Length: 478
Ligand SMILES: Cc1ncc(COP(=O)(O)O)c(C=O)c1O
Image (tube, rainbow, N blue to C red):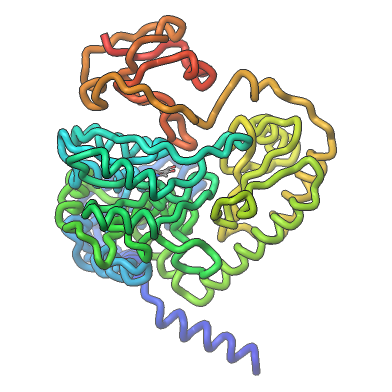
């Protein structure tokens, strides 16, 4: 009796939750046509056999682009795509949502291109993703760097203080935007409410790159999304933690935003492919449908429970340390940054991978980052905690990486030339050893985390060398 009730509730819920792109794609699949249009593999008929076996015939037969089969268009948004974007805006609490292909990178490029101008300044944290800077290189606006607090013994950036933003706003004229990354890659959270109050006081729009925080609107135990804290634009990498397919993201314009969405849309139209993958768009539609469904919320609760379980296991492992709220920073519980005494993060990463078949999100000089994801099972966390227990008790000694190689850029730039001018300047490629004292002409920001080591226009110094082990040569201004 109880089981029947549960099944009925699930059916009712499924009927209520809509995913228009998914439905349109299903309809196209169920009603095949004779195709004389792109993509030329025509439902997988012209695809390498092994690849077809691997990904399946069905996936290839729904690999299509907009314009065809009543699937709507992305620019301008029409049909099921427009409907799906509206549903996403509602679910995330935005005035308008744009689906992004080419990830949050596309969103950041569009923000830089549409909302900043040559000669303007943009107050931005140094640990921003390189895509935000590419946006500025397109427009010609110049960054005014904010260096967040540092958590030295973890070799990571901490939060951004509103007082630093206010000081930069007082000291600079012609500021086009304040652009903040929140949370950091490792899950450190800044006080966006205070930052947005400062921005409102100076009437400067606030962009929050919330690439790593797209789940926040869906559970009260996670930090609050910037969409509710006064930001004007928020970018979310749904593919990172929100359950959509790789490369698919969203850009939201907040309800009370002072920004005109049309300007952003015009830039997106120019930056996006003219053949958007319906599969990726459908995956955004379906990720949103899951997140706002009862079952999705249960899944997220389970994820948070799993993260807490992992953290409680880690608390009991001698020699292992985890970054957590008690360190004085707000954090996202699902991002677990750990270190083990005597081991570099890189070495710990390789022990986990080689000896235990565990792949973590990333490793730095000091620690490794574990993401507790919607798709992980409880048994995954048991296995991981057991492995870490064994590794931490093995008394490893490895300080090589700590002394010779650095992975998380923690440098304050010495700016000698404008970002854009240096990028387009006449350049030469010279050996790394000769580059000290020269001006960089290239972006060096390895992924992950895509944070800049060197940018065009910045002086190359001895301090950069430990971050450049994989480089023989550098591109400098001639
Ligand atoms: C803070 C931040 N913003 C933007 C991006 C770019 O995201 P995507 O990979 O979705 O293009 C990343 C990627 O790691 C990121 O860390």
